[in-house]
Image 1 (cartoon, protein in one colour):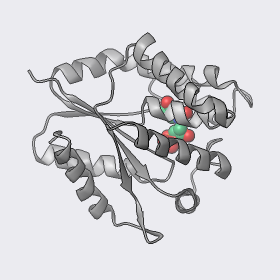
Image 2 (cartoon, protein in one colour):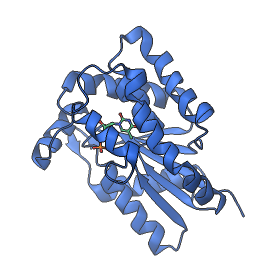
Image 3 (spheres, helix red, strand yellow):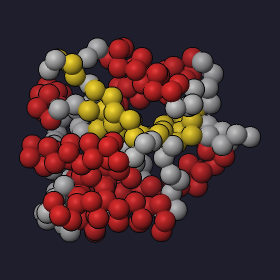
Image 4 (tube, protein in one colour):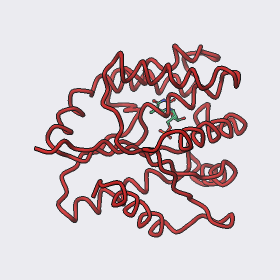
Length: 218
Ligand code: TMP
């Protein structure tokens, strides 16, 4: 059995990655391609996911040191690690909406710039070396400029988490995501806007499939 592939969708809130994940799942289903999907954090579904939710809503206090704040997110992934490994061993495409990188960039953004890159490496060490989570084969970063994303979040009218309220923080998150795209060949960027307009969802979906084909996923 050929080993499956772990595909991660990343992006700032309001980037449309969840919609793109739904489009992709429909494509995989229609083409009988064996797959599994997962959404992190698993808010209500896991013990640690619900701690992550409390943390995001500020219920655990403000200014939690980043090295502590990332732990419930990492444990949430640890709780489902064996499933992910067996899906991959079973040859599935595993599509994860957010993964280690979300913890790395969102929490690094709270640190002074000089500490951000080493913190990102520390989070990867925690999750991949210490916890032993599978490495991503491909990360798609859906790049939605913060201003456009904010207007979408406002339109959605959902409760904003502590990050969604802070535009400056989100701009730093965006910069850190871009640094990962520049550094790692298995990170690919999908532009969600063109000439300051949000691109049609179907057009972005087609680009996602092209990136998959170029990277030997489909
Ligand atoms: P979302 O549910 O709207 O995608 O938002 C998830 C929030 O949680 C987002 O602000 C990023 C943050 N996050 C982490 O800090 N660490 C993680 O591991 C994950 C998955 C999300």
